[in-house]
Image 1: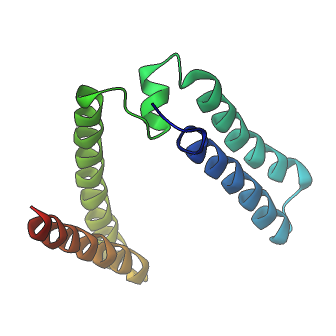
Image 2: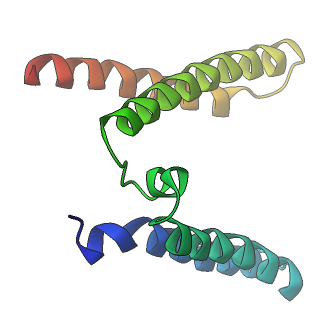
Length: 129
């Protein structure tokens, strides 16, 4: 049984991110319409999660509440694939920018954070197992 806090955590965070995105856009002199669209996208995502998480396995998983071990395994596999794709994209973007003469330091930093997080997670889960 899940508590209301668990059920509401991801939708509330998505809603807050929508507010922060809108404020950031307004701070960068964007139009009110652009800020409203950014907020509306995140608010719609938040509302969809709230309305569908009890009816849809996928919405439940996106809310951080996998139904059973099968969905938890699917989530782990999807996260693993997304991490591998992100690593390839970061390396490719770094190389493209580096060869074109641009400043690739942003990709280098992101790659370093990704690598350190991965190595840290390996060590953490090795110690805990």
